[in-house]
Image (cartoon, rainbow, N blue to C red):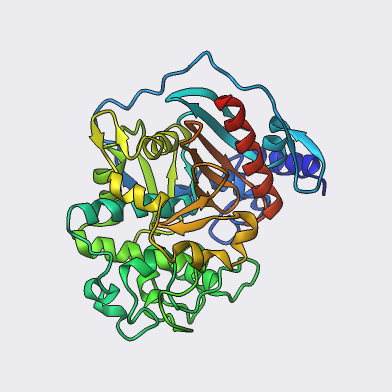
Length: 410
């Protein structure tokens, strides 16, 4: 189906889902069908109606103000991956955008909401959640509560007999463990789908472990730790478990205390939890566009918000300029095609353009944080791609963001 017709189909379905009381059976969204293409737009805005969530409190302080500016960007033309040309507006429309914000030099250049999204709507961030958890880890390291070089089992001895035996905290931070884990969303028996069922994101089968941590303790090894980068959501869940043990607090409260309140969030966020109350660290956070933009601005400003150092400057400096071997661990993987010259560090993706690296937070179905220090530009985009992964949508979105940053910097 062409992109414009597909977008219309998704929109028409989303506006009628869960309508009426009770909704007719064919329009109900529930645990068994919320990730189906026709349901994701509604589901991503109503996660707590499908899966239990824990509150990430914004506190009672004044939110960090998002100042608007008279500056603007035009509608630059972008060369798509298929060789055709489109404007930025067309690419945003074709990639199932729910909301987008562009920030330049600390001020909001563009803020828009699509198909019923509002400033107060919390939207599922999927794996952008990983980068927020990575920042929690950075703060704990700065506070000397967490040692990146220590063994995972120093904090979580329960995994001493599984594939995480011998892995360091640094290995899980950079996804360079040697565990068996396929991030293949189209294969029902892949490890990512088994883990989803265990953590309550889909109906469990009889043999599935109950809870995310019970699943992690069953993971097998397929090679040494510290080798090539391989994207594995399980590593973030392992990192979250380590952080909770190191700090003695659950992840929802750590994010609130260490990240959400210090960055001046305007609204509470939330994170889904599994059947035993464990947070889904790898993709469970829902937040508003405006607060995700505040997170992006904090990263753009080397971890600072006004006079507060939220994420340690040294942690971000290490992310943008990592130790030897990090780039090499990424260079020969399939990810190099999408992010040439890039790397993965501390739960962030890095794209190496001609000047400063561009930092990315990426989530399936089109969630994006784009931070370009060279142009002083941050772009946040929430989306509802019908498919979990779409390389063309991602590539075209990145090209649109690069075009915006280029025009603003000029």
